[in-house]
Amino acid sequence: MMDEEDFDFRERWREESRRMFDTSEAKKAFENVFDHRTQRALLKLADRKVLERLYGTIESGKESVVFLADTPDGERVLVKIYMTRAGNFREMKQYLQGDKRFRNVKDDRWSIITEWCRKEYRNLQKARNVVRCPEPIDTEDNILVMEFIGEDFRPYPKLKDVEIENPEFGYERVIDGIERLWRQEELVHGDLSEYNILVEEDELVLIDFSQGIHKTHPRAQELLRRDIEQVADFFEKQGSETDPQKAFERIFSGEEAL
Ligand SMILES: Nc1ncnc2c1ncn2[C@@H]1O[C@H](COP(=O)(O)OP(=O)(O)OP(=O)(O)O)[C@@H](O)[C@H]1O
Ligand SMILES: [Mg+2]
Image (cartoon, rainbow, N blue to C red; front, side, top):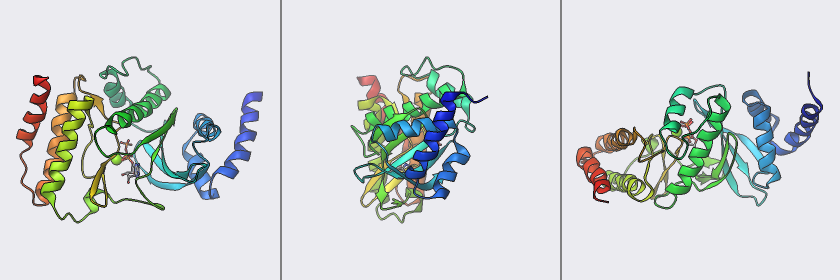
């Protein structure tokens, strides 16, 4: 049975979504994956004047679908929407529970996914103080709106797809970023690799902070080491000399000295 509120919402969605989505394909791409709760969240962001127009998806991963959109001011933004059907909820919960900022997450999928989204938002807020990363703009339930790192409709390329001129410099930059995140913001990215770094002219932009955890998390040290090793592996293949063990010790012992 559909109650009156549901009925009203459906009507509202039908009307407003037609205006919001650039094409019927874009609307379909959204409706095929997302349920009423996500529709409501999207309309709330429109009510708050965060989003006005939605374009199609640029990528869909295991856990999220990424759309381009415009704000009412005509600024292009990226909208990352977490799926409630897919995803490794057990692992997400483990990441959340060990983090003192998110310890009390409830057990259902919707709670886990909305906290996960909030975590990425908060991580970006912190990371922005010390590295180049997308500026978080707003979040509602499982939807995260952030600065678009790209031009027009094209995201800047991923590090893995770029011809690198100076791998030593790149390696130093990323390790320096990892160090700043750890020392100044007490944060580990947790999924850093050439897949989650975009190349914006001469600058490297770190993205995808959803797995980021506070340095007091039981897995923080392990993930710090893994981030460093993955980055070192990549730049080593590009011809840079790297010493991930030394980088790890330096960064980690910095914390001891504090
Ligand atoms: N702010 C952004 N600006 C431009 N492109 C982006 C931005 N955020 C994400 N992208 C593009 O969308 C892709 C997927 O985003 P992201 O890496 O955040 O999600 P994911 O890999 O699906 O991660 P997860 O599901 O683990 O959170 C990126 O690889 C990148 O190409
Ligand atoms: Mg990614």
